Each structure stands twice: as C-alpha cells, then as structure tokens.
Length: 192
Image (cartoon, rainbow, N blue to C red; front, side, top):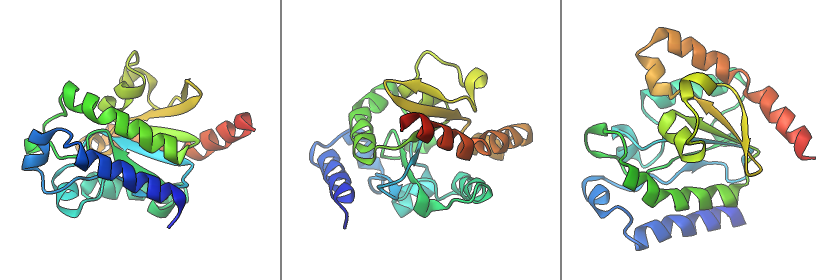
C-alpha cells in the first residue's frame, strides 16, 4: 500500500473518530470517502453521495457515475487513472442539497485529501463543489474554463446528474470534458 493511501485512510478514520455531521451519519449506510488512484493528476469533486453511493460506499456509481465513466473513456482514461470524491461524505436524506454547515464541516477533510494527492487539476462537478473553491464564480458563466487559485488549477464543470435530464447540458458537459487532456498538459507545462 502506498504512503498516500495510508494518509488518506488516516483522514477517513479521523472523520469517523470526530463523528463529523452525526445527524447525516445516523441516516446514512456508510461513509463515502473517495475512490481511485491516490497518485492521480486529476481529482474530481462532486457534492455528496446519492443512494447508490451510500449503498456501495463509492462515489459516482449510479447513473451520473456511468455517464462520468463514459466521458472518461472518451478522453482515454478510466477510474484507475483518477481520484474521485465528494465534499460531503454522507448521503443527505432524500438526496437534498448539502447544507452550508455540512459542507463547512467536511471541507477541511477534502482539503486534506487534496493535500495528500497533490493533483495537477481539480475538476469540480456542479455548483456546490465549485463554490467551495471558487465562491465568487457562477458555473453557468465559467464552466469549462480553468481557474488558478492559490497555486491550484480548478476546472468547473456541470454535474453529470444535471446532464442526464437535459440533452443540451449533456453535450455541453461532453464538450467541456473533451478539454481536460489539453488543460492537464498545459498545467503540467506551466508547473515545470
């Protein structure tokens, strides 16, 4: 097991030990911490687990996750190449949006995850995720445009779930997603 994975496991244990968001934890099946390659250049951050994620203990395993996998395939990647997580690590009841205080409670753990992984690019999926890192921006105006903040590059994208119900948004997301390899390359170049 690599050192980064051990550090991530420690963060996960800390969330459980600190009993973060006990009301959320009580009604969830389990903690959905994150999944994928701890050495990834690319980290995807969603907002919170849904029903399938809660049952399987992995982020993005439902319909939105299948669409995400398809898009990864389009750019020649799969789950083993990336790391994927959510801001909030427990499923909110009835899939409601995570509350500001829930996001605030989990943010330090997400920041620790990113510190361990040291990704080249953080792809935020949906406005909740984007607003954690880039609160001053509107996703409808900046989706698909990389933004650098405090040395980290973020790429705001619409949430794959939104695209499942909206054909036009699906195409927008596919178009934005197709930019990822070039953005990754560019950031890697500028970081040298």
